[in-house]
Length: 90
Image (cartoon, rainbow, N blue to C red):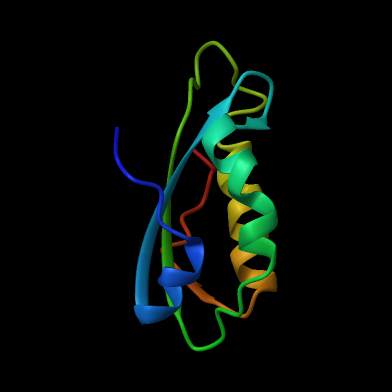
């Protein structure tokens, strides 16, 4: 098992790529959910964050990528500049 590093280490890097799967019915996956309070304490002002998400668009089309939206809202509210927005149409 990999060691768990504090999320505060993210402040050491000006560019971050964060990935998250959508679990069950639009929920956070357990690993992210356990670290969410730690993420809420970070100041990411001046950092650039790209996000990617995983999910089941066939089995759960109405909740596909919901967790990525939650993560986007969290890092944006912490002052990060986010990149890589893509339209959902089509």
